[in-house]
Structure formats: structure tokens, C-alpha cells
Image (cartoon, rainbow, N blue to C red; front, side):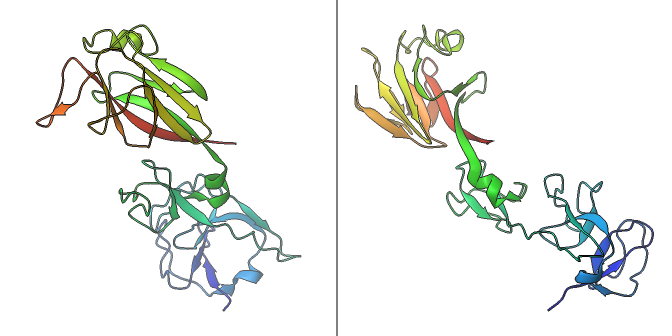
Length: 240
């Protein structure tokens, strides 16, 4: 069925007929026209309410969807060329999973994604993952390049790790290959824990977003050992 819109003469945005009043200036609904006959104008369609807004509108006034990344479709009265339909999704900031834009909880990890802004599926699928380690106390963090990175009191994050008595000069190797990440315990003294479980020495152990790595210690009775270092694995996405 053809969608019917009415145009507010004041703000020049188009609304579906179910919207009885313009949210910008309280103008009452006017006569509707089919989408195919809308006059020449640059607009973008809100992925949630499907109303049409001029390019200068940055946030949907009806459902507060962020419109800054919504592509602008151009149609002309001569060709009636409709903007290409775009599928919008939400990427979980915690695990990186791609979800339908109307979900409130991530289908991958269950985290709340209600505040994640919709992006196009094309953008989501072109994202290149970048891993980051962030200390539990949030005093330090570092991005991890592809390949090997060494952690310790004499290595990466040395200014922070040298203050931790249980951390060796060269305590761990982090290996990043593509969208996967591993850690190897190369310390000759204290162990490494991942989610409070000791990992084997000199074997690569795969990490996942949200894992907490303990260099030299563990969580005991709900408390982080003060002389050990605890780093959380986070993931970011850079679009090609």
C-alpha cells in the first residue's frame, strides 16, 4: 500500500497521516498525498517512525532518533525517484554484535543497547574491530595493534604497571590477528587470570570483549588484589 504523507507548510517536513500535528510548530494535519507525488526536496527518513525530514533536522522530534547519520535521499518531481531503502541496525558497544534497530537488548550478549544509535547495515558490516585494554580503575588504557604487544612493568603500560608489585617486567604477550585476540602468560613468577581463572603458562588463551585480565593476581572475596593489575578487554569499530 502506498504511504500517504502530509506536508507542514511552516517547517516543510512530511508526516504520515497518523501524525495529526507538526511537533515543531503545532500546525494541524493537511491533506495527504502519496509518497510518489511528493514535490522535489531533499529529505531523510527516520528509520523508526518513517516520517520525512529536511537535511538540517538532526534529531527526530517524534521518537528522538539521531538523524545525523541517516543518508539524504533526493527525488525529483519529474522522475519520482524514491530514495533507496536503507536497513538500519544497532551495533552493541559491548560485544560488537549487529542487532535489529528496534531491539533494546543485544541478541549476542544481552546488554542494554537502547542508547545505541542506528547505523546502516552496510556501515555495521564494514566495521573493522580494534581492541583496547582498560584498567578496572580506569586510570589507563591502550589500543592494541595487529600482531604482538607485550605488557609489563618494562613494556606497554609500564607507567601504570610498574606500580603493581605482582606484575613482572615482561608479564604477558597479547596477540591480535584480524578480529580475534589472545593472551599468553610469559611471567616467571605470578600467574595471569582471565575472568578470575588461572590460564596455562606459555599457551595462547583467546580473549573476548568484556573479559577481565588479571596480571599477577585474582579477585578474592569480591575484591581485586591491590598489588595486581586488572585490565578489561573492550572493542571499538573503525569504518573502512
